[in-house]
Amino acid sequence: MPILPTSDRRARLIAAAFLVLAPLAYGALGVSLDMDANWDLRNYHWYNAYAFLTGRIGIDLLPAQMPSFYNPILDLPFYWLATAFPAPVAGFVWSAVQGLNLPLLFGLAMASLSVGTEMRRTLLAAALAAMGGLGGGTLGLLGTTFQDNVVSLGVLGAALVVVSGLPRLLDGPAGWAFARVAAGGVLAGAAMGAKNPTVIFAVGLCLAFLVLPARPWRRLWLAFFFGIGVLAGLAATGGFWMVHLWQSYGNPIFPHMNHVFKSPLAAISDYRNYSFLPADPVERVFFPFYFLRDPIKVGEVAWFDLRVPLLFALVPLAGLAALVRRPAQAVAVPGAARYLLTALAVTYALWVYMFCVYRYLVPVEMLAPLAVVLAAGRLPMPVKVRMGAATALLVLVQATMQPADWGRVNWSRQWVQADVPSIEDPDHTMLLMGGYWAISHVVPLFPPQMPVVRIQSNFLQPDSVGNGMRAVLERRVAEHKGAFLMLSTIPDTPGAAKAAALMGLTLDPQGCRPVPNNLGETLNLCPVRR
Image (cartoon, rainbow, N blue to C red; front, side, top):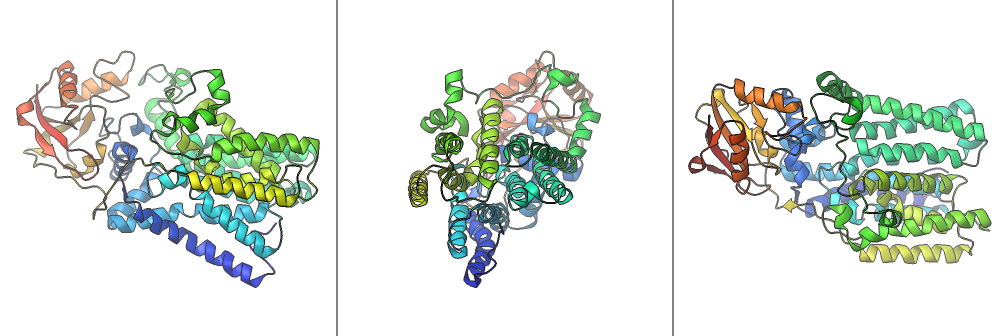
């Protein structure tokens, strides 16, 4: 099905207006929500881009804690925007980039649905796309640096490449079909290479080919070539970083899965975050209803959205109904509903097993309005009843939505500002970092000749056992012959002093000076001596 109207001129104008104006409106909406100051921005998104662009990788040690080892590729464009332009301008552009999800959602709806006239289909697609950008997680992420609504561009783009090729992919020329799905795989793989948790979408989109209404070998070859594309995309955006991690640490996804790669520079551990996973099998099976009641389980902050619980109930019903009897009047292009709903189901199953961090599931939230229509369209009821039920459910979903807020502040001229005190001898001073709070965003504002070593983090402490990075930390501190300064939050200063003492250093609390900054609490800069 074409992703743009072909015969109705007014529908074409409406479609064109939506494609152009939706990202701009999203940009303006992002500015209205105030400036992002989330914990991850302060912990690593800002610093990692700075370190990569200024060649500080290998000079500094763990300023961003464990995320110091994360691929910085997604953080580079934001960092460039936010350092080259006033913060409100950068925020508008960044939000508009995230708003490109809306044209992709529009295209997916146009390519999937086969209801009514072109005008009706266009208006429905625009409404579903707009709703896709107004979910509790999606709206909360607008204008932020978490990147889950940036890698979603690859996920939705991959789905659009596939779905807009239906039904020709099912029985058209094999070479064309395989090349097309490989192109879709490249987009999904690029998203995965840029942010590893996106693997759940790459796998979901790949396995969904196996349920298409095509010959068995055709399905397998489509999945195979999509997988080849995924590997190519992964290499394009993640390959350089995996090579760097392999050469530096002996683990291409360091420190994750170190129980497999056994790098001596980390503990023998999988470094997996278990804190969000369900407590027992019953909770895992019915997890959407658990986190609907307690969103902190998966969201880190309070929010409310019915999309995922609704899909959890509706998609299995649609699958069972399709096994019993086909609807008399289809609302979707052959294969489209089956492909998308299967991809979402597989993705969710992987998510609830591997992560349970709601941000990682945001592309599902974006697709949920379309998925509700597709799932309702497979129920054995008159088409007006199906569409009426879908409309009522979506109105309820949007009316009850409450967006997440991971932390915002009033707009300032520059995204990151801090009043760093004068450093007496920066050429011979090492900046130590203590505590576990997110403070590396101020590091770029210190004199660049100062090496930065974090002695206390969620990856390494001075008394860590079985982590070979401890020897690196001790050597870096021991070999420094000049002065030391300790940066921490004010509440973390006593803990930072204890960490320094474990390394034979003494923090002088009487000499501490405040470091006010615009994104978080005032920090402490304290002299340290041997």
